[in-house]
Image (cartoon, rainbow, N blue to C red; front, side, top):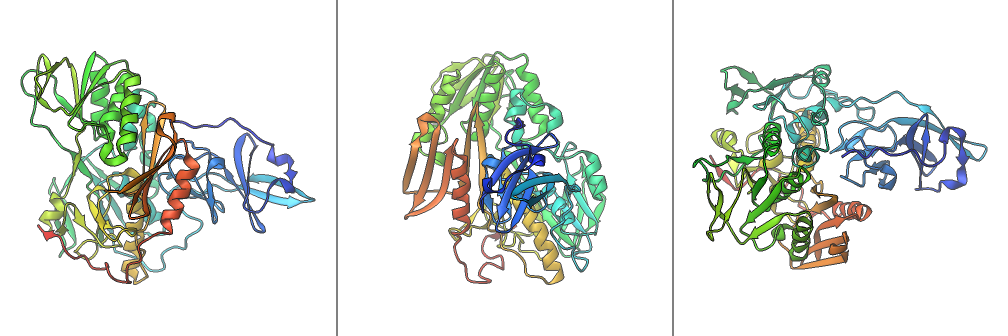
Length: 533
């Protein structure tokens, strides 16, 4: 997980010749024992910390866009001017350094005062008060990012963040990757210490569920009978794993992976397990398989499809994924389903029996829309939102796994179950809550979806969204673990998957940002269609 870099390049406090940094160029060096990236943009020089605060990616290998730099690993974005984390998945800033040019040399002269997470040196405080209060239901990716963004934007009103998980907010992607594999300690999992929320005056209400939303009275009711009034509400209730109607015959319980408690339970069970069966060749299922192999557990994967991940990545990528896992000892049982689990193990539909003292299912998730449905919000395989992420009820927004929003590149409504998308939803919804309340011009959500998946030492980055395609172009060779795979429909590139081609992934994202479908102004400002619960 950690990408902490060794110090390389010149000591920038001693100066380097100005000619070594052309306009638009970057220079990696160090100052006072820390890696520093210097960038020239026209007549201006910028210097910031060179290590991404998300998972430690090398910003010097990233992409400079305007006055920002994007991390090559997971597409976080930082301000060159202040070091602020302006786009997730990074939440914390990098250091900002003073840099000057004299006598034909560039010098980094010292570190500037730190910009704290949850604060901004770039954005003006909200001129009026915004909504009288903000309640956020769900402290996952979207909810946490929204709360932080409200404070970054200068909102001073009450913020309440409610979640039934008493451990939230935490880094959910790591639960199936390094943490489950035993490569990341648990103290890396929380997104922030509890003091962070206290310092920002964000009220955390954990271990409690919202049971009802009254959109007319602008009030939510919790399972303990208490109520919270709101001026603006964000529903970020996430999704739940699809549960299988199996087990109960004296065999191992079926375990699912969604929460920190789930990951802890699988780790505990793996400590005594010799034979694991993973039901489902989804991203989660395969990441669990890789993590269990890292712990020395024998793993069999059972799935109904002929190739793992073919529906998302195509046939060639699917064959590569299978071969990669087989290299690490995973045994696949494809075009198969599990029909029973008992003390002897897992029985497949074909009659084959697999020994199992640990069973994990990763067969998809369902969005948690019951609360929205009971509140009468428009639904369509998720909560229907407009281009500003507002639902059919004024002042109520939805973000993350539950939100079905208009895709600016196709004009279709989509629902995306990715951590980074949820975080950016939360940030956009927060900004629109403030602008909507104050009569300002709200922002369309136009960010390009991005996710990453880790299989042993092979990272897969995916940018864009392609539910279907009529052509796949491959630059390089998937089998060589060095490729750019483009998914096209009617001549347009809808998505790009890469292995060890991080720069190309960033460049593809930038192209897609400029390839948004031009909806007529106001065409999706009102939520239409769908059904009401």
